[in-house]
Length: 166
Image 1 (spheres, helix red, strand yellow):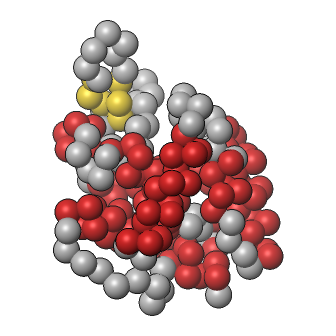
Image 2: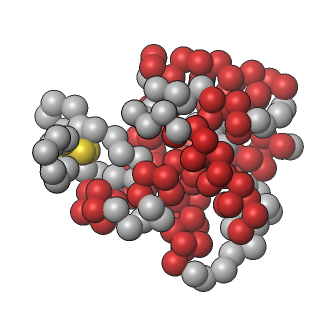
Image 3: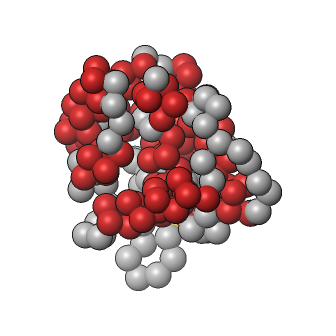
């Protein structure tokens, strides 16, 4: 049951209407929809999806979120739609048609890309054991971002979201 609650958030929250909570609800809706369509062992805990979206967009205030529906700082590959970052080190950030497209791509990336093999193994093990350890999953995302404190920041956001929104 813990796995179902963590990956589909069935009967696990009560909403409010502040802008940050509306952002959380938007991300949550997309993540639940994606999790409901894939194999149970590949479902990612909603709290982790929300935490990364918050970290990458500042609760939906980033330019990439507003102009490209990019919630996770995903860089465009050759031939994909993109917007360029501002500043000296220009990066091509992937552009998505909808915000849910961004959430879907991010979640698919985590469960299929070879760079996240450790994450995938931990996720499957947690499914088999019917336990959720988001901190362990976060620890396996050491190569997701260039920021050496990324994991620490995600853990802080997870606590805040658990205390305020779920």
